[in-house]
Length: 334
Image 1 (cartoon, rainbow, N blue to C red):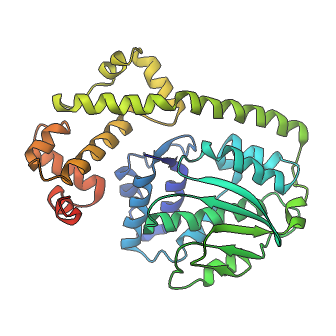
Image 2: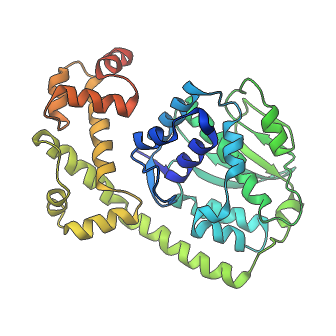
Image 3: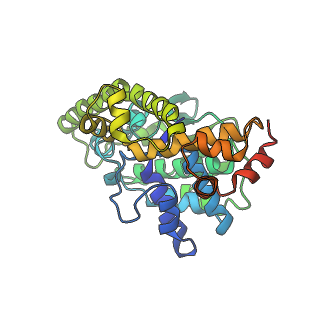
C-alpha cells in the first residue's frame, strides 16, 4: 500500500472550511487535530482518498482542489521545500521534485518531459481513478503552480494544463487559477511550461545552499530506501499476532529483533507509528476477509484482534464509513 504526507490531508480539510467537522475528519484518520503539520508524518493513500470522498459527500468539492493547491506554501514542505526555493532556476526546482518526491509520497512519480511547445511536468499515479484520486491529482497540479509562483520573479502562467479524468461540473475556478486552458479527459496529468519560464532565475536561488540541501535530501532518500522493508515486516508480524488480540508494540519489536525504543524511532523516521500500522493492518485484513464469504462476521472480528463483534463493527465503520455487513454486500462477496 502506498502512502502520502499527512500535510495534504490537513490542507484539504482546512480548505473545505467550516461546513465540515475538521476535528472529526482528522481524528478519523488517526491525525491529532491539534498536532503539528509534519510533512514526514505519512498516511495510507487509500485513507486519504476515503477522506476526500467523505468531504465530497458533505460539500461541493468542485473547486476544493484549486483552493487547496493555492494554499500550499514551500515552507510547509520541509527540506524539499527549501531545496525547491534555493534551486537556481525554476526548471532546477522542478527537477528536485522529480528526483525527491518520494519524500512526500510513494504513490506518485513526477517526470519532466521535453515537448515541441516547451516542457511537460507530468504526474504519474497508477490505480483506479476514483473520486478521491481525481481530487488529489487536481490539487497536486494546482500546488505545483502555487509553489512556482512563490519563487519566480515573473508571473507563472502555463500555456496549458492537462488532466486525465473527465471534467467536473465547472472548470471556471481551475482556469482562473492556472490562467490558461485546462483540458480534461486527456492521456496525461501534466502542466506545460514554456522554456523561458523554466529558465527564469529563482528569487532566492543560491547555488551553495542548494548543494547543501541536495546532500541532505540524498541522505533522507537513502534512509527511506533502507528502512522501507521494516514497514512490511511490521505489518506481517501484526497480522500474525492479531488472532491473539491487539498486539503490543514491545512484543512485535522483540519478534523483529529490536528494542521497543529503537523500533519506535525507526518507524517515526519514516513518518509511521505502531498504532497507524496496526489500524491499517486490521483494516486491510478485515476488507480481504469480508470479500470472501468463508468467514462469519464474528470470526472476522476474532481474526482482526477484537474481543467482541460490536467493537469490530464500530472500528470498521470508522475506517470505511459503513458496517462490515454493508461492505460485504457492496463488494459482492467475491
